[in-house]
Image 1 (cartoon, helix red, strand yellow):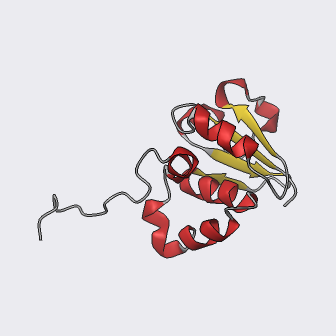
Image 2: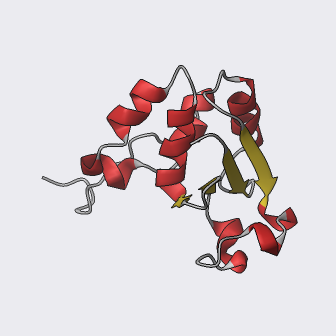
Length: 123
């Protein structure tokens, strides 16, 4: 993978997170494209362009697509200082925890490991 395009909306990728990613050393370039500005010809056929504002989407130069938490892990993996962390939190057993990690890593905001308990915290 030589290049990643991240399609985002500020509701899923905070502006401070984007600036943080841009300032980090990378293994390859990461291009950011706001979902509202994306040219339909750049969207892989498997994606519905209307769903782009609701999801963080990463696309590599070969057209492979990652969404939401998997896209976050891919971006962390592309950062020189965070590849090891991406491999640790990208393990399939941690799938339920993969959303909002970029915002947390970038500035310590958000919930990096949300509580999976569905019993209201009892027991």
